[in-house]
Amino acid sequence: MLRGTLKLALVTLLLAGCGGDAPEEAAPAQDAAAAGMSADEAALDEVAAYWETHYNMGHADMVASVYTEDAVALPASGNVFEGRAAIEADLAAGMAASPQATINSMETMIFGDMAVGIGTYSIAASPEGAEAMGWSGAYMNLVVKEDGEWKIAANLSNYDAAPPLDWAWDTYEGEVPEEAGTMAELVEFYESQYNMGHAAEVASAYTDGAMAAFSDNPFRSGMSEIQAQLQTNIDTGAIVTIHDVSTTELADGWAVDAGWYQLNASDAGDPVRYGNYMNLVQQQDDGSWKIHWMVTNGWPAAAQEAADRLP
Image (cartoon, rainbow, N blue to C red; front, side, top):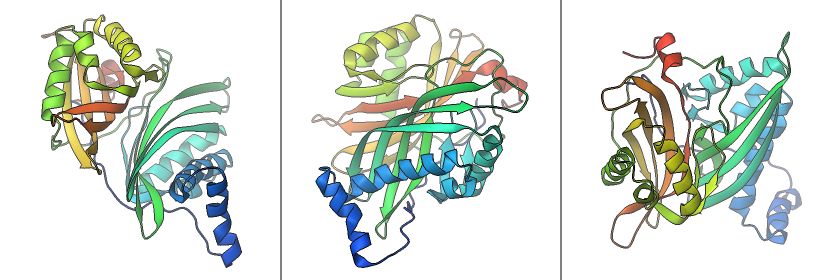
């Protein structure tokens, strides 16, 4: 099993609102209305803009300030960072290469005091003594509003292309998380149909307008594109085992479900890959659940075994 925790903490999201006189405070709401956006939509977009601006300026502490104290970050590199302090330390370490990020916020759904957003990112870096490099991928954020303010509570990101074979994967020492999610029926259906090679059946577990960013791939839109990607994945012959760790109910038949997965070469084969996932799921009229948005990341099992991440 993978050693790592996946804990979704639903806590506050702060937007650096520092006061000012009444006209200045009213301006963002007026700008949002002029753009056809709600105040919450504008505020959530501002989080992404604030993150990008201060990341590119090398301000690790200011970037970290948009995360809750108990935030969980599940980056594409395979690590798990729990808490704002750990996230800030990771940001600071990465900023030594003077990275420059571009964030593209694609869609956000707001459920009262909670919201889920998906988007893409790209980063260019110039490590000292090495050639310039760049990478990109997708992300999903879980955020909440408390006392009128927003903050990132959980984030998962991936790469949209396979990194080089000698990519330096992160290491993490932790305990295997308890499987406390409530999407057992969806997970069991997905897992069983995938392992039987039924790409069309697995694709039926997604909504008609679904968006899915599988590890090492860009976003796929709609069931037909998702089915094509599933067929490509299934054709590798790997067997998947999915561990449903956490389900957070939102509102009106929506929830965020998250966990981790393991791919084995065959039923009795060695592990070949591990990864985390985060899904926005929608309840159907018959009471079943389907995936509306999905982002998964993943890393080679050999990298984790070398890092002594397996029990």
